[in-house]
Image 1 (cartoon, one colour):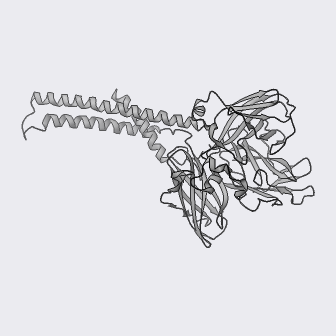
Image 2 (image 1 turned 90 degrees about the vertical axis):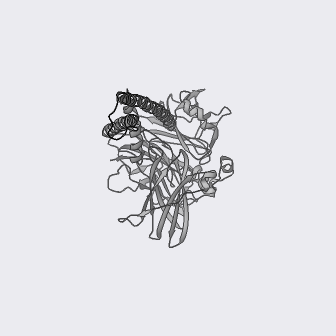
Image 3 (image 1 turned 120 degrees about the horizontal axis):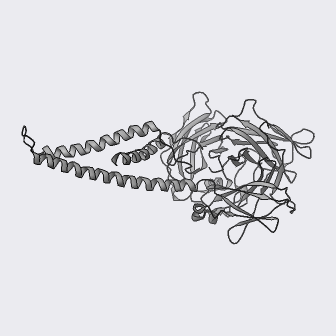
Length: 507
């Protein structure tokens, strides 16, 4: 009985030990794309920040800060809550180390000790003085790490040895502690030693039992939190032939229990960004913005679309700045709906194949969109800047680009197996609502955000934020795993929202 109990506790203990050793495993603000990428300015310094979020919380986040100039001399990092009282008390900063190979690159490691919306404070010092940048980071556990069998066996042997040693020591103390030097051990003293060993055995078993109960309870609580941070499921219903009702799935009890939908805030001017992608071809995409209903659900009047199975991704941002992507699927018949209006847009592409690879898309009006991609193959978990250029019908750089929902462009990155979906912008993968919260003040709340305007911030990580802006569009990102991907790029030109597509393979 003691051996089986030891096996259980050792496995639990080993799980904790491995968590401490392997905390930096990267992996879900957006589905399957958990790491944070941000490009922006810390005062006079232009930075590209990557935060590799650990799979286990508490865990270690690897932070990379790249400057585009030689002006940065010193970088330090710290982590706090994104908003509220905790955001005002940053711990002692960690000094980022400058790379010996690339002097523009600084790296540091930060512990994420709690769940929720955090922010990485980046302090920069250089030729132009000191500056600071806040990068929101969603901190969430995504899995429980397994225990290596060798470590489990080692801990099992040690636990058994400790238990037997404790029992033996107590028995010897009861048997011989009052015995004069050289005196023989009487039968009564031997019985006393055996009784003490039996009592100690019961005490050791009780200690193990209650330790197991506590550990199992803690593990179950951790697993429940882990389930919470998996992509919540959507319940989708077609109403009256052309309206889509969107609400959390009744089967997702954890999601409903925490009532996240009750406290969402606008992001890019909308409470929800809904993406319908026809699968498995990924040949149709719709970027829509449903309206919230009095009962808390969302409803959208669908445009005209072709029949098929659609995978649905719904982006929302909680009142603390935490981003969520709800997922679901629905088969839709051919729908004759209203023309697109406002910020809604759609796009078409040929079916995705395993050999698909493209760097140029020519739109129906002759507009050419070019992806200036390096000749080297793309690799997973490597931060990069994706650079696009919009050219008019004559091949010249377009001069009539306009902001689209406060940004130079939006992009959706989808893997062929649908395990990765990311909605990114020129500023990166961070939601605008979280950026606004981080930049406004440490005590920002949903109420204070309601009065804030998109134009209060430079969202474009460059000079692309005003009418007549540059035709060159850049977006920071890092593909989280190998595979085939389709990228939909959406931008606004001459008061019309366009959608271009690109395919790529990531090694």
